[in-house]
Image (cartoon, rainbow, N blue to C red; front, side, top):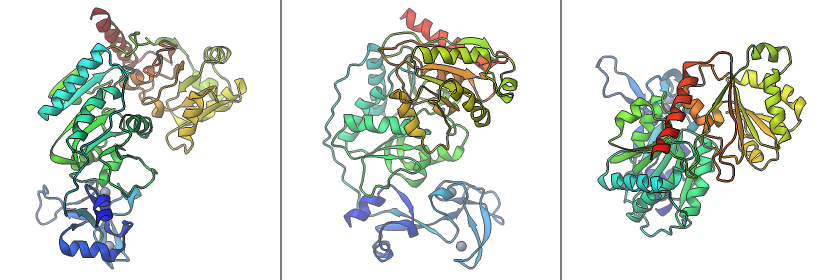
Length: 450
Ligand SMILES: [Zn+2]
Ligand SMILES: [Zn+2]
């Protein structure tokens, strides 16, 4: 039984997709250890009894597609929203574990000897206090404040209580950055890192670091969920991801959130809030420079880089400083790439669907590439020592004030290079640019006054 129990505890899985023989699954269903559920269910909150609406049991999506199903030989509904995880349809079953509960490990090795600044220490204690009280907590910590360390103490306490913990984030890059850090701090703890395309795990993990997408596949699993970068795209606009987080936790479990740029909604939801306005190394946040780059699109369409942008890039190349240049669209970025490669062949571009994204970021960190052109996909979660940052078209609507603050947060993160250039190239100053700059200055002022 062990391996099925290990695999299925806290998960919700397509019956036809488990790695186990169907006969064993059916056997457990008979015993009541596994419960099957209809993949598509009637929506209980539906107003009309005559025409009930339906929803996907796994992702909660209510916009379902009707089709003539070969399997059930009739009209059938399926969910397009979570189809990448295997098709959930009216005639498919999802299974959950309802057998004996796993007794979690309460002994964990805690291998962390870093020091917290006094502000970090205070916030870490406040969070721990909220964990004891089982109240939701918002950690509002500026980019580079060292927010991951603030979780260690709370996670340790939870693990030692034998509880199951999830650190979720909308961003794959953040999962990739967090997972090895947690594994280092908790070397004996089974930790799963889950993201689209991650290896399948058959065993039971007490600590899970996952994208919010992956939480579609959990149900009533976690005693506590921390949502890191809780204001990041697409979490804030995709309600099904928020549904996923709430479905993945146990009924009484609390959701804590962590971000450098909380939305008004997050500020309202939190029972307790800790604010850290200072970076862990004590240096101020880099303040953006606004530089007019008029008609840059026209220039690029004509196969030229605007002189100011070219000069900026040449400076980085000359000083051998790694750089990131953010673009509002993939199209513009790809148009610009060959122009940058004329300056240096070793400049590359990266976007969300890029299969080599992980390697490219690593190559920049190791100075194997000089610079990366990127979309907002790299706005969070990455740390590159001595990186210089430019935003092209900072006035475009995709660059919200939060996005600009996060992008600026890439600069000066390491103690060896606590400063760096942050330039917003624009075709006219936007409200978001002003707001981002004002917020950064306000954090720096708060820090100065303490
Ligand atoms: Zn679905
Ligand atoms: Zn069907």
